[in-house]
Every structure is written in structure tokens, then in C-alpha cells.
Image 1: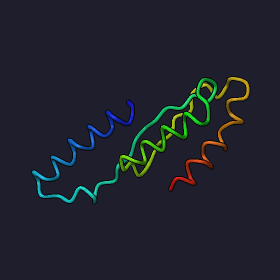
Image 2: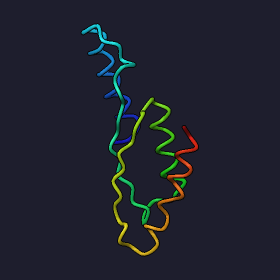
Image 3: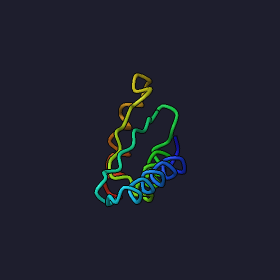
Length: 87
């Protein structure tokens, strides 16, 4: 699910909060995202996470696919460092 669909889900939650009189800001926005560094560039991953941040995602639970492929696991620190700098 990309950032546009996640934002649509957040909008639904916001509507429910308004209906129930709950402050939307009190809800932690967490996303599960799958990354395959054997197939995706570090720049692509950082861009996606930046988009998730832009729609107010507070946490991303990261699933790593393809880490068994040569060179993929070694790339993990690069997007982590760049995404941390987005905060």
C-alpha cells in the first residue's frame, strides 16, 4: 500500500475521530512497509519513507525482503541513516 492509500486510511480515521469527539492527534500513525534492497535503490526507499512522513506517519515497521541476496543486507544502514535524518 503506497502513501496515497495510507493517507486515505488516515482520512477515514480522522473522520471517525470527529464523529466520536476524539482528538486525531492523540492517535499514533504507524505503517508496515516492506523493503527489498536487492530490487529497490536506497533513494527509492528513502523517497517512500519521506512520503510516509509527509502524510504524518509517525512510525514505520520495516519488513526486509531479499536480505539473503548478495549485497542487500549491507545496504540496510544507508536508508536507515537517511530516514533518521528526515525526522
